[in-house]
Image (cartoon, rainbow, N blue to C red; front, side, top):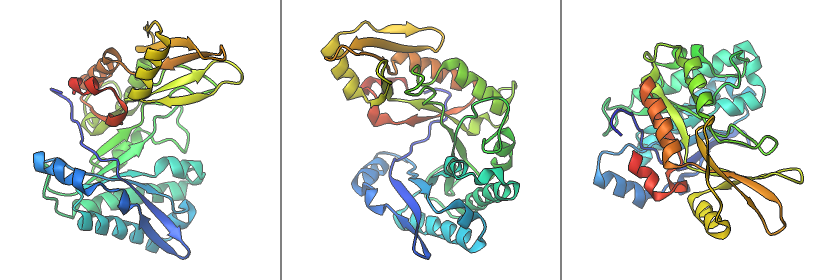
Length: 307
């Protein structure tokens, strides 16, 4: 991809959790050491595992010793496994627990992420341009221009910009079983980028990684609704079984099709296409942003031809 900053990330999943009175890191067994070694043998690929913090946020953010312990666990795991940093997921969980409504805890939450980023930057990495460990932070798109306390907004982006190397922006899962529709309407993506970056299309755009889904959803349109995630294999099977007519929805810039199952219930399937992905890559490029794909293994093989 000519002008896009694409991160190479592994989906190895680590958890920081409470175990009695202790805080532990779990999930090392998820790492595919052979695959990681092969990646590095072929090039200078950076490997950053995804880390989810599951410690109760009120316990974590009120106790400096616990925050220091979490940072130490992450640093030690990166050293032991020769990782190049981490992808951290915590904001959405803190929001779900309601702690971000507390101004003091919200400030501490930002301070924790900043301290983690600074600690990682102080550790040398064998790979990468900056030669230090990286922190990518997962953030969700605000649902309206009127930000709530639990939203991660443009001010937070600026606050963490020096400590965080990339912000993985989850611009997907726009629709839901109760409101079926496109996965990531293009206009919504554009307005989200504008909310974070303003109209200047520069500044911190290079640190934003626009989320692009390589999966879709199959929505049941009757009997109370429902939804099921669709991978590339599922998508091809549905096409083979039902032979539907694939349609382009101009407003969202996504392809979809309708079909009826054996119980004569109607479904609508939204799944990425070369055209829909191209539109989102163009949008990222126009802002000077990078991309974050969820996830490559769920897409059709030829999707990678665009990268």
